[in-house]
Each structure stands twice: as structure tokens, then as C-alpha cells.
Amino acid sequence: MRSSLVCSATLALALSGIACRQDMHDQPRYKPLAASDFFSDHRSARPQVEGTVARGHLRTDEARYTGKIGDKDVDVFPFPITRDDLERGQQRFNIYCTPCHSRLGDGNGLVVQRGFRQAASYYSDRVMKEPVGHYFDVITNGFGAMPSYASRITPDDRWRVIAYVRALQLSEFATVNDVPPDVRDKLTAEPPPLQWQAPAPTPAKPPAAQRGGQKR
Image (tube, rainbow, N blue to C red; front, side, top):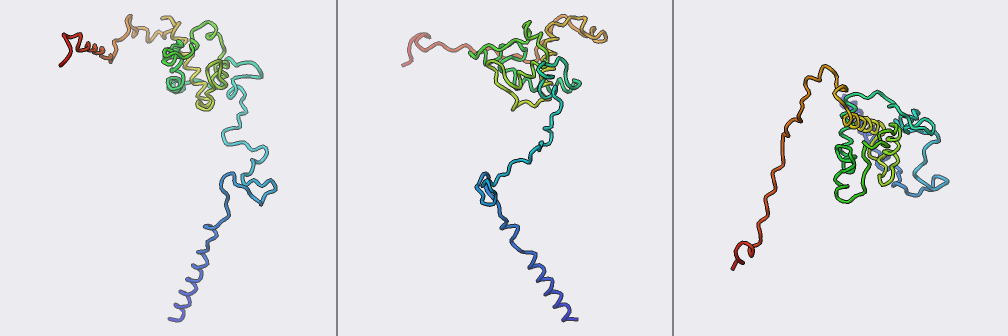
């Protein structure tokens, strides 16, 4: 019995020793962009297989990802715009668009007030008449002094920003007839009071010489 236990223990120890090989620790590997003698082109980084499409990048919907059908700007949104989409568009707009266009969309953002080139107003006749596909193309590829925002705003978020811009334009020229009848009674003739107002700046004290003589 004791001999059998010893044999079993010896066999188990031998098997565990086999499992402790260093193949996984010492496996061949290359540093990024290192040279290789294994491949004929001597590159360790292999190109993608022809026809490979990254997940989420098939983009067969031309209008959704280019804002165009053929060479013509589309004039409808490629997916239904919900309230959540508008709120997301407002958030992205406030982050990326307001420095130049301001939160009102009148083109007088803070960088413009500090000397940057005048940004477009969303309420000019020319901009108001542009189809939504034009806005998508401008955000994607830039226009004039405006750079491309393709690397910062995803395609669907670009459409949400455009939807919010359309909401701004509608609000600028809206009348009471555009308000649903069930909420018209809630409208007020005057804007609501501000919840917070910055305190008035404290006037600077004049130099000592102007207050009755220099300090000794």
C-alpha cells in the first residue's frame, strides 16, 4: 500500500514538472514595427487581410456616413430624431461648437470675441437654406477656417448636433402658433428671473498718491 502511494506521488510530481515548461514565458514575439526574417517583406506587423472590415465600420448606409446620396446633400435625417438625441446633440454642441458659434448659434463665441475669425451665424439666410447633409459635410470635412471634427464627433453624434442646430433655428423664428395648444397657457410674457447673477466687480482703489499723498 505504501509502495503504491509513493509511486502515485512520484507520478504526480513528474506530471506537474512537465506542466511547468517555459514555452509560454519564452514564446517568440516582436516589438511593434520590429523587423522580421520570417516574412519575405521583413515586416513583423502584418497587413490586414484584403476585404477586412473592422467591427462597426462597414458603413453601407451612404447618407448616414457621408450626408450625401451620390453628389447631392441629403435633406432628411438618416434615422428618427428623439428627445434623447436632441439632448445628446445639445451636449456635443456645447462642447465643440460654442467656442466659435456661441450657445445661441449667432457666431459670436468666446474665441471670436477674442479676435478669432468671425464664425457663421446659423440664422443667416444662406445657412438656414442649406440641407442637413451640408451641415454633416462641414462637420466632417471642415469649411473655411473651421477644421474637421470627424475625429472628435462620431457620425451619429454629428446628426444629433445638426438636429439641435435645427431646433435653435426653429426657436429663433418661432411664433406662438408653433407651440402645442396644450402648453400655450404656460407661456409667460416676460422671461423668468435669472437663478444666479455674477456679483458686480469691486472698483479698484486709486494709487496712494491720489488718496492724499504718498505713503511714508
